[in-house]
Structure formats: structure tokens, C-alpha cells
Length: 469
Image 1 (cartoon, rainbow, N blue to C red):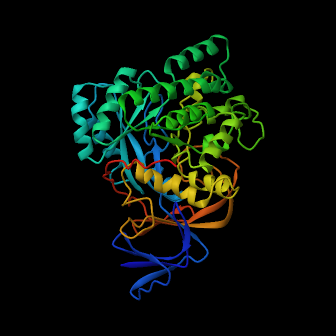
Image 2 (image 1 turned 120 degrees about the vertical axis):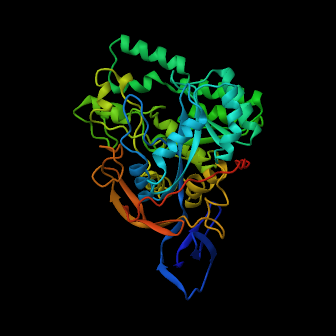
Image 3 (image 1 turned 180 degrees about the horizontal axis):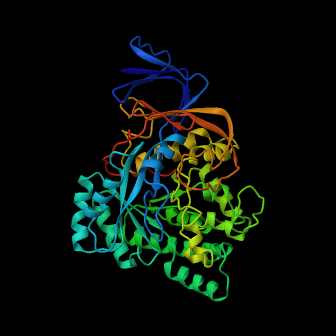
């Protein structure tokens, strides 16, 4: 069965041009003006933008800690597809005492057969030994070429020595390590100090993880990476200080790739006191718990710095760090102690419309840059380019038909995410994923899923270490 998308404007990371798109057998066959295919089903997309399917390279579905996330792979990937995201990369976590193989099998059990968008896994290590090192080659055969480490959280973080060893080992296979950069010891001490002085409400969460905590860890991580002589990735960068340190290392020849998230672009730390994003102050001081994530939401000056970096092509990806703990029961575990609030918030569904509304429409970035940050760059960095990330012949027919003129308001009532709140409640946005095609199959229309469970596991190749300007 052939499908011909007629009359749209195809957006790439470099340019936008009016073109038709012919699809057959899950692949894009041709792109150009005036394509004729008498045996194809015609879909009129006149006046619409055609983006390559968006990729969210940082999600946490079915995560179990102090609580279990509201979204598993069934609900989370439906929410992703509804917003225009056709591929996610989640974290298969090898807890201490586990092998990577055991972790991978567990995440396949969670995702296989239920995902409504395509998916892959980063392998997250929480310790290091000779057996895990030998297993890395097996991970590559399973399509895993990206890995995750933590410099915070006692149950997850590795030592600096092991960080160095892991970077060296992953460099041997042409992979990349993305690291959560916060000084875990300082977070513990600052938190204990605040709690001991009775400062227990959510407004103190950002004070327990100040910008210097991220900046120090970024400097240390990049120093270790320089000694290991490998390219590295920093996930969910949130501060001006961290960004400036990364840029200094780049000036001295380091290959550093930087991810940020919508929450660090459109929110500031007033949400911890107000409990809302729209400016109105909640009557319950605990409502700020809805925004308890790590790293925390920062100052407006940090937001401005990150937008400017995006404008100048100095960042690489915008992911979500979607980690959707419910407000009721889950977040409330920390009502008397902010350090017990499960860290994380939902976001996978709304990332594209937030970046379009507050980035493209406000002139902070172009639609071509949006394409780069949400599609092309993550496809390159995570070994999917040639399959994902562009609307080009031979690529998967993952296409988002974007209506620029739609106006609507985000609410927990109209979201597909299973969480009982959205931090974006009441935010007015522009644009919508009118139609979402996953490998040529229509899976969503105007935010509603029309075909479930169509996702498949993506075997990823080596990373493409593109150069910054």
C-alpha cells in the first residue's frame, strides 16, 4: 500500500521546502514537488508542516523507586505518539548485582508488544567490574550503543575511578556515555542541613541542589572525560554555570554533547513557592511538590542562557526526562520532608508543542532548529540516523503533520499521560500534531491515539559524532 502526502512543507534541520512525500512498505520512497502515484492513497496536507518523527532520548517508564511511575510503556508511549514523538529511548538499569543482560531482558518485558512508538534503551550501570566490561560487546550486538551514569544518588552513582574506566571502555566500541551531573555528597549534606533547621517544604528542594552542585560535577565529569580522551554527553543540563564550563572544555578541543529539557526553558524556581506555572499562587504550599525534579528548576537567567545556546546551535538535544510520579499518594510521601518527594514529572506528550510555542513561535529558535533538537541530532547521536531523524528516501516513514494554527490549553483532563497532574496545567499553546505516522501507519490524530502497540525495538548503530560549528 502506497501513501502520498501532498502539498505540505517538509522541514529538515537545514531548510524547509514545499514537497510531496511518497511512502511504501514503512519507508519514504521519494520527496519532491509534483510526485504522481496513481496507485497511492492521497493525504492532503496542504498548509501543514511535515516534521520527521520526534525522538525523546530521555524517558523513565515503569520506573520503580520509593513509588512506581504512573506511566508504563503502554501509557507512556501512547502519550508520546499523541504529541508527535515516534521514538523514545528509555533506561535499562542494571542495579547493583545485576548483569546488563538481566536488565535488558527486564526492560524488554516491560516494553515489547505494548509500545505505541518505536523504542530503544540506554544501558545504565550503577557499578563496574570485569564481567560488566566484557558484557559491553554483547550490548552492542543487542543494539545498545549509549550508556548512562549517575554522579548523584547513593544507589545509582559510580565512583570517579569507575566513571573513568567506563568511559574508556565505551569509547572502545564507539558508543557514548550520558551522565547525570550533580555532586551527590554535597546534595546529601545540603539536604540534611536544611531538614535539621526545619526547612522541609518543597520550596527548599532547589536550595538542596544549587547551580554550583551541577557546575562542579560538570567540571569533574569533563575532566575525567578529557583524561579518558572520549566524547561524552551531559543529560538534562539546567544551569548557566554548567553550560559555561562545557563551552570552556569545547574551546580546548573536548567533544561534549549537551541535552536540556523543556522544564529548564519555560519554568523558573518561583513554581516551588507558587505551586503553579501560570503565576497564580496555590493555597497549599505543598503544591510545589509537582515540580520537584532533579536537577531542580532554575532561575530565569538560566532559562535565558539555555535559549540563547539553542539559538546559537550550542546545545544538541531537547529531551524530557519524563518520570511521572502521581501527586496524590506518591509525591505526598514527602509532605513533611521534601527530600522524600519522588523526583520527577511528566512531559513526554507536550515537549513538541512547548518547544514550538515558546521557541519557534516566539522567535527564539527556528522550526529547522526545532527539527534538529527534537529529531535529527538525537538520531545522529544515538545511532539511528539513516533510519530516523529526517524525511528522506530510505528513512522510516515517521512523519508528524503539524498544524501551526491550532490553539489550545494543556490540562490533565486532555492529556494521554497517566499521571494525575501536569506541571503545564493551564498553559496556552500553539500548534498540534494533527497526524502522526509511524513507519507509514497513522497512529495518532489531533492528540488522540488511533492505533496502539505499533512500536518496535530499534537496533542502534554506533554514534555519529558530528562537529559543532
